[in-house]
Amino acid sequence: QVQLVESGGGLVQAGGSLRLSCAASGRTFSSYTMGWFRQAPGKEREFVARIGWYADSVKGRFSISRDNAKSTVYLQMNSLKPEDTAVYYCAARLPSSGLYSYWGQGTQVTVSS
Image (cartoon, rainbow, N blue to C red; front, side, top):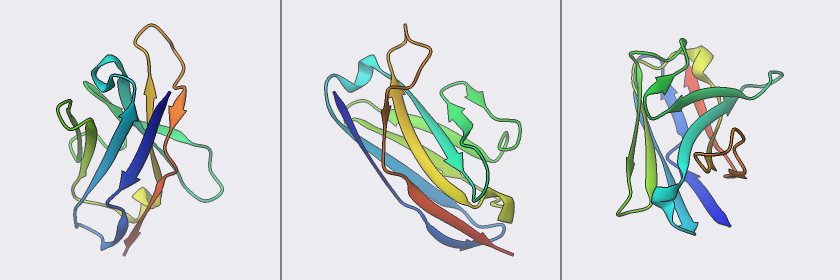
């Protein structure tokens, strides 16, 4: 089992920045592929980023990184837009699996215009 806890969300003006953190506990963090997803009101959950891959909507603005020593994955979000408003979730999967099996509770990001 892997437990994931996100933090760092909040209210920011358009053009601003936020850094989300996702702290993991449980089994060996470094064994897992970590990803970020988001869900806006009335929309389906969508992929945002994993190491080396980004949704087209966030390319050049968001950056994902991880610190295995701290069992933490980060999402640096710059040049935020109102359409980035959503609940952001981190998730974990084993590299051999196509499905993310473990999810955090989510953190709200609100970008005002």
